[in-house]
Length: 227
Ligand code: SF4
Image 1 (cartoon, rainbow, N blue to C red):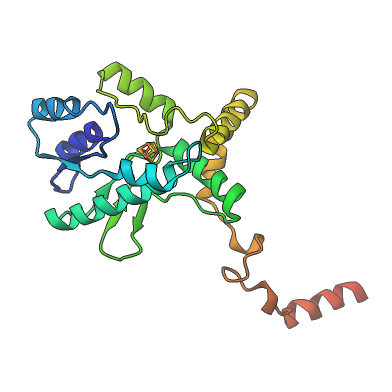
Image 2: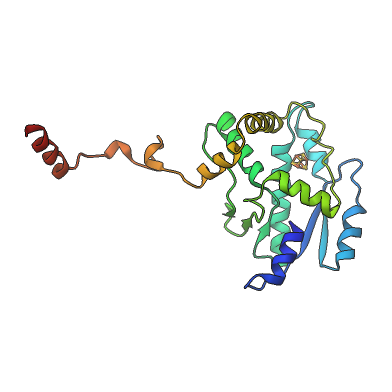
């Protein structure tokens, strides 16, 4: 994502500054030297925010349970605060199309709600705007590009070994579908951009309970029947 933003900074018709931010969440074995070395080489402004969210997650989440939901909330809160401190007006996150589709199914399966992660979002506190520049890119392309450019990748060893992660289950499900029906993930993603509230069942979004018959259309229908 940083590579894409640096490119856009050169060619986009708008001006913006980039500050690279990474979090050191004090996970054991976190290779803390990798990103500073890389970012220093790029010659850009960067910050490594140190916050021991690892201990909080370990303390609150029972062994074997999924750590991501709490961990990501803690991380998001820290980043929001830091964005405020440095006066950033947008916070860019690296979620891609496949993350968005996976989140959509996770919310449907476990929260009973139709929601995913939008390409642009105003945070609940109203202070931060989140953008997802990779929202329309699929994971495979990003992976291939990252391999080609040999970007330093730091896997998460807090949850990376959790085989029962529901996100992984959903990912496997989507991959199996994609294998059997190529293009299905893209089709699902397209459907997230083509929502028809009147064809769903959320009465807050579309008040179908107050629907009334159109009197003119009804009389026309009666006339046709009478003919
Ligand atoms: S992948 Fe790792 S760092 Fe990311 S939310 Fe899950 S536990 Fe936290």
